[in-house]
Image (cartoon, rainbow, N blue to C red):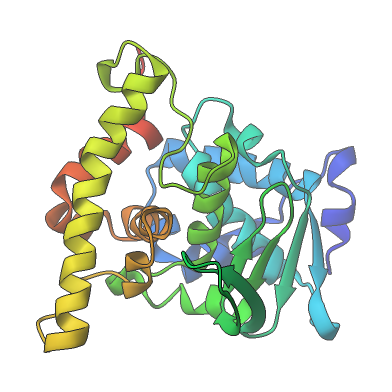
Length: 263
């Protein structure tokens, strides 16, 4: 097991049976068009060649683990210019068997320091590793209906972080969506994303406080606009049809970024 992975630099490819098992487990991968499926496997091979997996607290890294994470991680960059360059700020991927407890420290507007523990399924560090719960990765094979996917969530954060801020807006070039400058492209992006976030947050508050119908998508997206972007990316990639029905304007925006038209 994993012998093929250690030899990737010298040419071997992902074993057919192991790759097919990965596609079969995650329906949003097996439903890709043939050309996308070919590119997914190519980028997954390169991803596995360049990244290093570490099992936390004795967790065993197996073929199933690395292939599941690689295939889902490369899905967001499948059509982005630069491809895996979007992930070149880190090498390590740390996998825990289950959820983790992260110690947080925040300073509120009155400069009072608050420390607390947060249970998390994953975390992406700027210029650092990605940490994932294997249980949560496996859960993503059964949560297409809710739009949940921890791998895509954390790697969407990596894409968002490319300009140094987790603010829901990845770096955009001049010309994006017809904008003449990069600043205009950012403004155009936020003109669509922020109203969607504000509406989602309002619905989440109404559901939590007054028992209103909860919105589709994980309510963690209401924490801030950066988390909303990551949660929205999860749904965009794993349940495009429902995402488009719920967030029509975001579907157009995300298509422009993640599936740019060839000019």
